[in-house]
Image 1 (cartoon, rainbow, N blue to C red):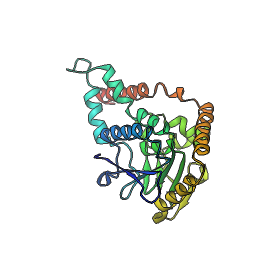
Image 2 (cartoon, rainbow, N blue to C red; image 1 turned 180 degrees about the horizontal axis):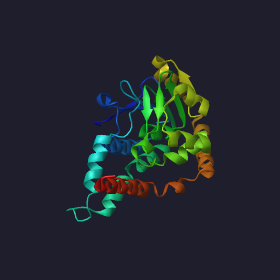
Image 3 (cartoon, rainbow, N blue to C red; image 1 turned 180 degrees about the vertical axis):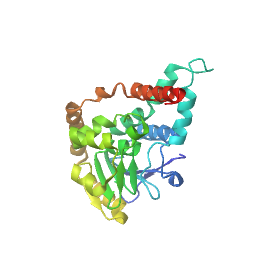
Image 4 (cartoon, rainbow, N blue to C red; image 1 turned 60 degrees about the vertical axis):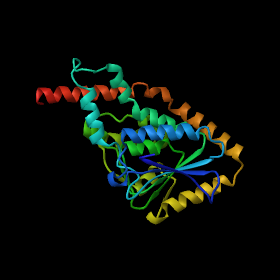
Length: 262
């Protein structure tokens, strides 16, 4: 894969580590990364030997979020004038739903998933992290949700997942203000399970994985599926049905403002 490393652990059978691997771009999430994550999840769903999955980022960051250059190029191409050659509303909608499909694939994994968050997790990266069961971050790690400052709604089904993890008031605060927050803040909000020294993020995730792998596999699997169902009962997945449409509407409004010079 070009943007991911997917490694089955030799020392801890049953552990798979997915590393976002675009360190030169702070692991910015490209369309290629979306495709490869969806493919990796599809494969892992059919791998009964994999019981725990760690997701982390190569280099200095978990991820700087959506690759805005790649997405802007795609948006400019897809959200062009209706008369533009090859333009298709359904192609637009398919493009706009890319992130939601990726996060759904991550959340649907039957394995226990652990986020090992290093450096920073911005926007779409936080949407990825919110899909995972357990999250560990380094002391200097930080987070932000900048979408509203970019004049787009938070999509990728992240609102419902944040509501489940940190509650309505905190979700509204973090998403509406776009304020950066620290790993200590994230721990206090309930978004993280542990904060550890920066150098210990991956070792701590592996230690947690080892503890889980020592438990009865069926009991762990049943606990995951039940807690996932309970979380979905709290904030149902179907509330995200219009995420792609909201994103399309925001892009169209932005193009209208640009055309009007406002």
